[in-house]
Length: 105
Image (cartoon, rainbow, N blue to C red; front, side, top):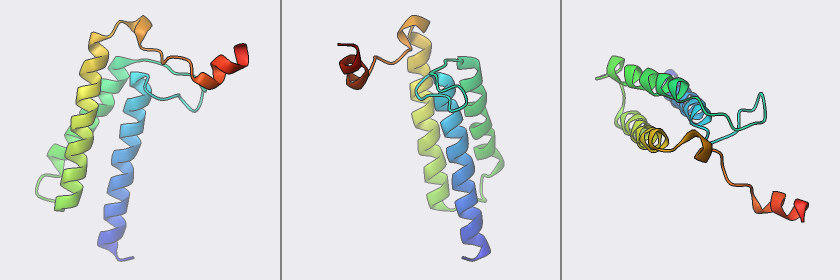
């Protein structure tokens, strides 16, 4: 793997890391440290803002695939963030899975 390929892989990893952190903060996935779904929209906004800053700072330095990837991630995160802003906090928790329903019956 040459330096350019390595840097592309590292860039993708950084973007995916911030994406996962934003999902956690929106309450879309469990926090692995607490094993709970937690919702902190300010935290989510911070991670989205960080990715937007990264996009601005890398203009002209990304390959077409990297640029497309980052733009798609940002678009997806923004849409979900807006959805979460409209949702009351009590509705943000995911519905129990069918597996947990079976255990309680």
